[in-house]
Length: 315
Image (cartoon, rainbow, N blue to C red; front, side, top):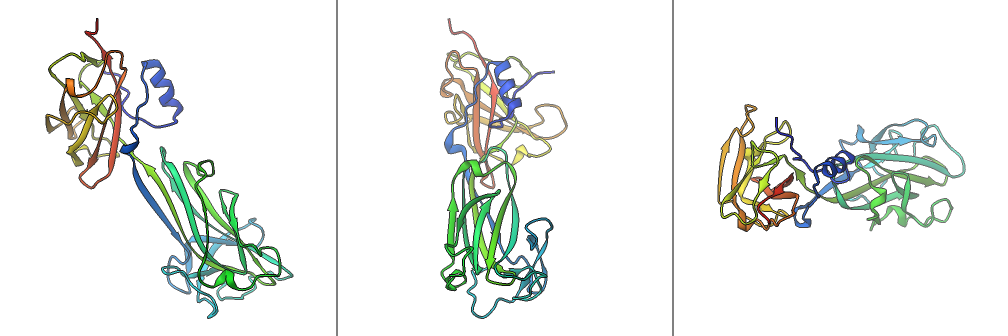
């Protein structure tokens, strides 16, 4: 069976080792990325119910429970599309705690995919009385009166305070925690918020240069064509690829296909897409050890893939 390196995952140790053993290099053109946005809000549900996406804690994070969606006090402003959340069933419920200066914690979780880049978090928040905003335990902003008794009420009136960060090291592949530490003069505190997490991503797909052969020998001086298959897998349907958007070559930005067809290229019972590219249009040069493909699905999702090659006929 043919050994192929067909899927690219940036930063993967497995990929790095495989590329080293195969003499390949990783090429991913910047324009092959798409921007995605995750929206996080307080109040995912009806007033009087538990918010399934937000949790609260009144014991410093030792225990957590689902936050409650409550009717905001008339003095509070509210960000459109959100609802006020609280640890108790009503505003100003003590939630079992009292004293001079109370800290109430809230948190929500979002997930970032492997290969994400250029992340940005923007959070708009109203808080009673004041909030510190954290991303994965690192502070990204706070109301200036937090921890004092000098809050004026502007913290829960319009416009909401905006906090943001684009520090890549604060974001991580997989689950990320956006949390709020709320300060109140004497009882538990609540808030409403809307957060946007934007990042660039590209859907990595399996490709097979010159199916049925290995190594994938290419003569850069050839006047022929190079067949390249985009394979259907458990997580990707190659029949959704728009062939008019596909480019293939040294960086994945060179040759458009001269021909394409749907067929079962790898004999696994599902339908793949096979494309033919004129060799002289690919920009592949003697000594290149990998080639890349980019394109889009019919729904506009950007895709990219890479495979190893061996150039011949160069002497």
